[in-house]
Amino acid sequence: MGVDAARAVADAVLFEGYLLYPYRASAVKNRMRWQFGVLAPPGEQSEPSSARTECLFAAEPGAELDVLVRCLHLRTRKADPDWDEGDLQEIGATVAADATGEVPFELPGGEDERESWLPLRGTIRISTTPVGHGLRRLAVVVENRTSWHPGSTTRAEMLRCSLVSTHVVLALRGGQFVSLLDPPEHAREAARRCRNEHTWPVLVGEPGERDVVLSAPIILYDYPAIAPQSPGDLFDATEIDEILTLRTMTLTDDEKREARETDPKAAAIIDRAERLSAEELSRLHGAIRYRGDRK
Image (cartoon, rainbow, N blue to C red; front, side, top):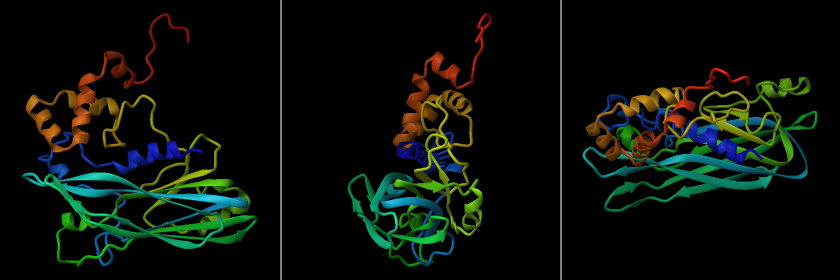
C-alpha cells in the first residue's frame, strides 16, 4: 500500500506555512500562521468545524478500510512572546468497507514548566452508500467537538482549541478506489455527485495503484510525490528547495540563533543547511550534464 507515500506527501501539506523563511518568530509573515486545514470548535465563524471527504470504491466481500486522521495539536511554549508549536497527531480506525458508524476521539491537554496545551475532542463519522456499477460512495466527516466560548477569545486562542492542518488517509484492503479526477465512463456521474468540503481526495502511491487515498485541505493531482532531491522539510511546498536553502545559508549568525530559538523544527532546517555537502546542494539544482557524458 502507499500509506507511507501518503504520509510523506501529507507532511508536506501538514507543515505548509508552519514557519516560513527566515524562520524567526519576529518575522511579520510568521505572525499569521496555520492557514490550511483548520477545524475550529463549533460556533466559530472564521473557520469550519468539520471537513467532509467523499470518494468512490469497489470492494470484495470482507474488505476492510483503514481511516487515518492526521492533524497538528498546538502547544504553546511559554516565552516572550509565546510561541505555538505543532504536535503531530494520528487518530486511526479500521472498519468493514461497507460500515457506517461514528468514532469519537480525544487529544488530552496538559501543562508543564515549558509549555501548555488544551484538550481537544472530535468525531470521525463514516458511511457508505451503493451507487451502482458495483461501486460504493464513501463519506468520512471529521468534526471538532471541543467546547469553548465563541467570540470571546482571539484567533490565537481559538487555534489552540482547533484541529490544525487536518487531513485524512484512507487505505482499502480487498478493494480499489476510483479517481475523482479521471473516473472511468461508468463512474463519471457518481464521481460528479461526490461532495467534498474543505478537503479534496486523490490517489497516492505508485501510478496505477488504487488502494490508498489522501484527502488534503489543498487541491492536488493523483499520485503526488515528494521530489527525491529534497533533503528535508522547508515548510513551503510551493517554493524551490535550492532557493530556500541558499537563502537560509545567507542568514547572519544572530538571525540563525533567533531561528534556532524560535522552534526546534527551524533549528533542524538551519543545521541541515549548514551540513549540506557541495554534492547534495548540486542535486537541488536539477539534472547536471558534464562534457563527455554520453547518457
